[in-house]
Image 1 (tube, rainbow over the protein chains, first blue to last red):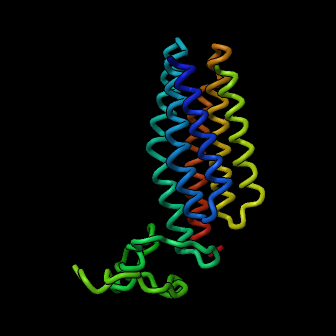
Image 2: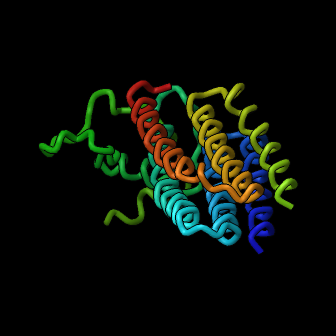
Length: 144
Length: 83
């Protein structure tokens, strides 16, 4: 049971590596890494926890898996947001671009702790390159 | 079966290493480095399963934490630098 689970996890990680090599966009590559390899690593760690006997080993493996599950989405969110806001990296968002809609509504992009805490909206260098308006009638329909 | 898993993980490491070396932007390199960390933790676990010796397993926890912190720091860096 344990080795089979580890093999499935390894194959998932290999698929993630294939996506990271072959996808053509930064966001697509990050997507491939985050989803597939998180599941792959957690499966490998679970397989190890099922195989090994000592309680210390099982605790370490389960802790590593829980930490991976908790931190990987946060790290991917931080990275994709920074990539989107950075000026030099070409990145495309497919259908729904909620951050651009937020900017169009006059609210600045939600900055990760950069607002200073005094309520001033982030301005200045935060204004990014101009982005084409969101396709479809989305921008004019629902000002909530 | 564990040996096969190690071979598969090594192939995945080749893919991530390729992206780390040739990635056009800094984000691509971070993605490759993150993948290599995952490959390392997986290889550590598989080797522990092969030998039945779990003395290295706390390293997996530490590498997971260090990977998250480094990714967060580089994200802040990219956001400020813009490239």
